[in-house]
Length: 164
Image 1 (spheres, one colour):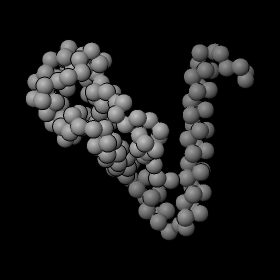
Image 2 (image 1 turned 60 degrees about the horizontal axis):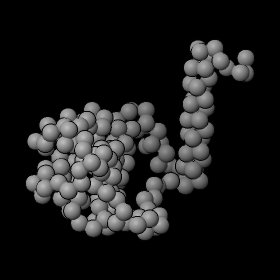
Image 3 (image 1 turned 180 degrees about the vertical axis):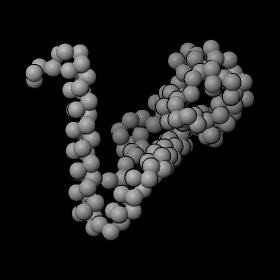
């Protein structure tokens, strides 16, 4: 099932309500380093020429009106057009959707780098839509079971599993 990304209007929220701090926090959650981690304030600062404390002020909303030069540096660092910070939120919304698609593509790329996942995906090409749906359902069941097993193992280790 493909992810559906709703616009602010479809979610029933005011598209102009997002602050600079919210946009920066969204970028920090969405745009990852080459390691796959979120960037730290120090890394953003080093990549933009701004100070780590100023980055922190912007993220917390304690400063909300960067100069055009600072907005351009942030935009370049995160790989978004400067309009993301300066124009109406409809443009930022479209950029957010593009970032979500890119994040999904990166997750798929990482998954496909596993030989076993690639083999499974290739074999699934021969299935009908119903077959693919059934496999997706089984995968969700397995994920839930593994999550439960891990949680039970941690609980057993601590000695608080009420089932025993």
